[in-house]
Image 1 (cartoon, helix red, strand yellow):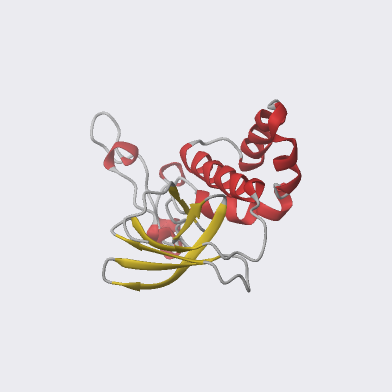
Image 2: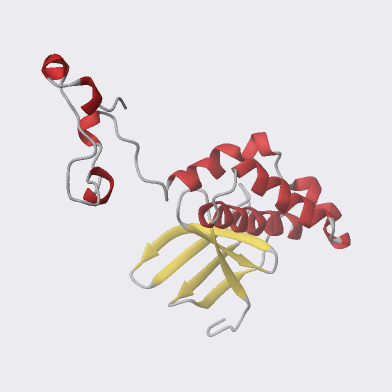
Amino acid sequence: MANVQVNIQYIPNAQGGENLVHEEYKFRVKNRKAERVYWRCCIKGCPATLNTHQGFTTKYSRNHNHVANPHKVAVDKFLVAMKTKVQEETKAVCAIYQEEISALRSDRDSGEMIREIPTFYSCCASLYRARAKILPALPQTRNDIQLPDSYTKTTSGDDFLLHAAADTRKSLPSRQIIKC
């Protein structure tokens, strides 16, 4: 079955790769060879496979041994969208989760999907990891702190922020030392 034009979508997975969604079934990468990708159904023990070449489906075996779960695919897309929102906004992660769940509850057709969405406690670690990817690393020592001159100089160019080593503190007047 060559050059089959089918509707496929790619969604990110937890490992940083991507899954393929076709006919409400989710596939994971089995193997890659150059521009060919061999996909296998995400359900363990299911023999269904799908092959793509440059993003086009070249072979698809429809021998799934389970029924499609469109709600599970919708939940995966919902969680990916929530992780994106966590990275884009500065609100608290739990507040973003509550807003997204509330928005989903207002939709009458999403009742079955809401039952499959993990609780905040179950998915908070992955949401916080997504947020941590965009935040700068915290400094471990004082020497790691690098402040631009706009924060360490006055408008006249004099030093505003001074750091003194522990052994030289007694030699400096106390009004010049700013404790951090």
